[in-house]
Length: 384
Image 1 (cartoon, rainbow, N blue to C red):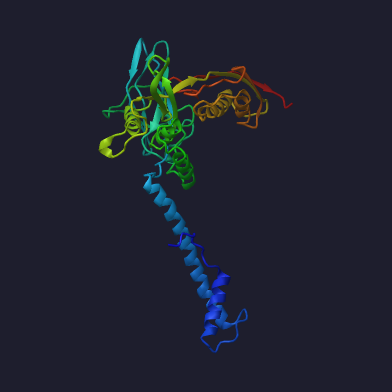
Image 2 (cartoon, rainbow, N blue to C red):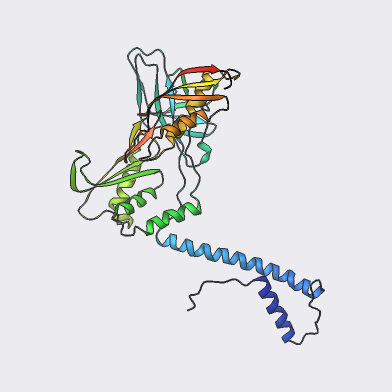
């Protein structure tokens, strides 16, 4: 069996072989100069053959990769769901107003809140995390695309009943939705998987968790009791995130079954025998931001527009960070300052330095359990 890789014939090689073959048959064809009728005809045929050979080579290489993926059941991930948060406003709350889990339909795209919430007087609103029902980019939307004051968004509880509210809107963009995993991304994930074929290593377990649809981030630790937090041998703890502060119990159970191993599905798991497995949610580290901003006195922006633009840019920077990513002071300031050409200076009152985020936590502004962002003052100054 020839194990050498397939090497396609080149155009010049095929032309030379064809001419040599015709001459060997003593054909009465002698004019092989460029532009001659017989050479032009043969070149046209060879162009088609070369194209067929190229298509075959691409299919050949694709089949080799796909056979490896199929052998290890390494299919493409369906993508990611967009996540964000909405602000649920109810101004006439006397004591406590309960907000059940509900859905939002926006031009056919559906979102759902991840947990029930409540507004406690004297507060007049609560921020609630939401996640799209489907994978893909269609669920990525900008600030205020959901706004019941403008008639954008149908709000219903799980039983299909309308809720009581003054306004529901998304202050910041809802992002993170991605389509089917690309060939390049799957190859990188597959390489990580192959390098951890021992399966029970922390890297192998994390690679397996990240291959589960719906999981966008994972953190794995060992020899820590998940209940007491003290060192104790025999534990493997997995903390996952789907982009929200509250991962669905179904996804947590899927991760547990995959790593634990469900014999009925012929999947024998990843963890070592005799090891206690725990699956939970990656903690949210609330990031609170307070800033002042100077803008050109010639700017036509209102103070509300200035705050919305700068705060959105700052929140997007923080909310795109992953597990264990530190919040860099200079990047926090520069993202807000660069969000509009009329902005001149941005001074951060809080924080005053980089914010360290340990592994096992995700920095976040807004939503359930997230931090706040405040624009304390807008100053209008002449052009420096």
